[in-house]
Image 1 (cartoon, rainbow, N blue to C red):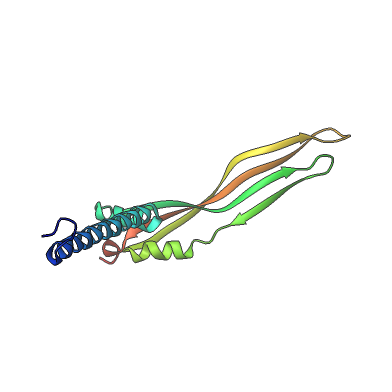
Image 2: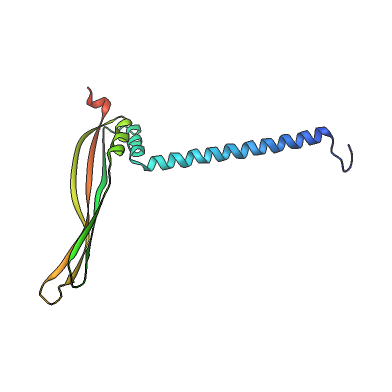
Length: 147
């Protein structure tokens, strides 16, 4: 063994350690990525449905906003509202893919706030409401429903 020069065995051993360390880091990175994806999925409606099924629930209920309305008033003019909608067909399909069957759906309008302003040159007020339509979906375990 030379003082400054490495033998082929020492070089091979050092390369093997480097490869092992790189493989270990890659395995840790993959495991962390899988944990992150599992945590993200658990937050989704389908993930919540899977967790409810694993916990032994026979019913699963979820509330999803369908549309949001934002009201505004314009000085000396009028009040108006802007509405945005959301589709949930794929979300409901993903819940049913987890072994649930849609049993009932209900909808409510929830007021989240309002804006008002005195009318210009007349009595009264202009008022614009903020709110959302929320869909409340009740699922029954598909295995129980077929009995």
